[in-house]
Image (tube, rainbow, N blue to C red; front, side, top):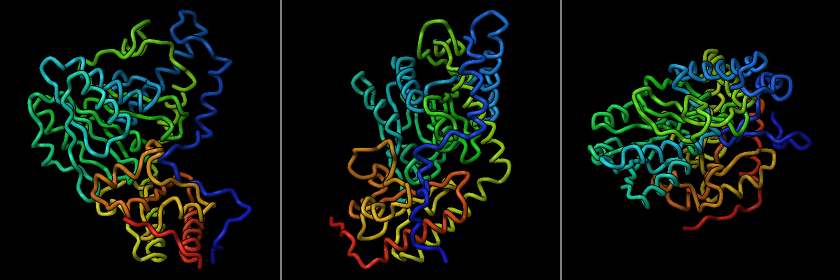
Length: 391
C-alpha cells in the first residue's frame, strides 16, 4: 500500500507542460561551445568551423524531427518570438490585400496578444470558438474564411488541457482561399510526432524548454512557398531572416534535444506515457467519482491530465498536496482570472476554478503516479472541510 505522504522526499514534479529540465545529454552536447569552441560561427578561420558545423547539424536535427528540409528551420529565442514574428511579418507582407487574421479562442498569449496588437494597425481579428472538449469548430472557421484572410493561427496542442487540434484540415481549408497557416506547436513537439509537411502549415513554432532543451532557444519552420519578411536586419545570419550572431551552445542544445525526442518517440514513448496518464486518471476517478476531466473525449497529449473536483478550487487542493508540484492551468496565464481555455469551452466559473493540470515527463514513473494519486486521495478525503466554490 502506498503511503499518503512522501514526507522527507523531494516533491513529485508534474508540471512538464510548464517547462522541462535540460536533459543530461543536452548539457553534455552544449558544454564545449561555452569555452573550448566558443568561436563566432561566421568567422572565416578553421577554428570557427566546428561552431558553424554544430549550428548546421542542429538545424538538420530539428528539421528531421519535423520532417522538413533543413533550410526551412530558423532559430529564434523561443516560442513567443516565433509567434510574434509570424503575426507581425504576415501583416506587413499581406495587409494591402488581406487584412483578416483568424485565431482560435484557446491560443497561447503570444498569439493572442500579438494578434490583438495588429488591430491598432488596421487588422480585422476574428476568433473562432471551440466545442465542449476544447477542439476548434471547423464549421465556424469555414464561415469566416474569405479571400481577405491573411493568416489562420491554430495551436497544435492546447497547453492547458492537452487537446490536439485538426491543423491539417485547417491548412486545407485556409489554403483554398489563399491564406497562410501558422501553428504554435510548442506543447506538441517532443510529446507526439509532429510532421510539418503532413500538417500542411506555412509556419510552425518550436519552444526548446518544452522538450528538454534550455530556455531561450526555439525555432520557426517557414515553408519554402512563402516569402516572410525578416525579423532582424544586419549581418544576414539565419538565411537573412534573423541577423545576429547565433548562440551556438543553445542552438546545439536544441538540436540534441530534437534527437532525443525522435528516439523517445520511436521507442514507443507516447504509448507508455499515455498508459501512466490513464492510470492516474483512473485512480483519480476512483477517489472522487464526480471529478471532471477536461478534453478526455478528444485526442490529447499523452502526458496531460486536466481536471477539477467539485467544491474545490485548484489552488486549495494543491495547497493540501505539497508533495506534488503542478499548476492550475497554463504557466503563461499567471495573473489572469480563471482559465481562458475552460472559459472558451463554456465551463462554469464554479467548475473552472477547480482546474488542476498534471503533466507528466519522460522520466515519470509508475511509483510517482501511485504516490501522486495517494497524496490527492489523502487531501480529498481528509476530515477537514474543503473550501466551497460558489457561482
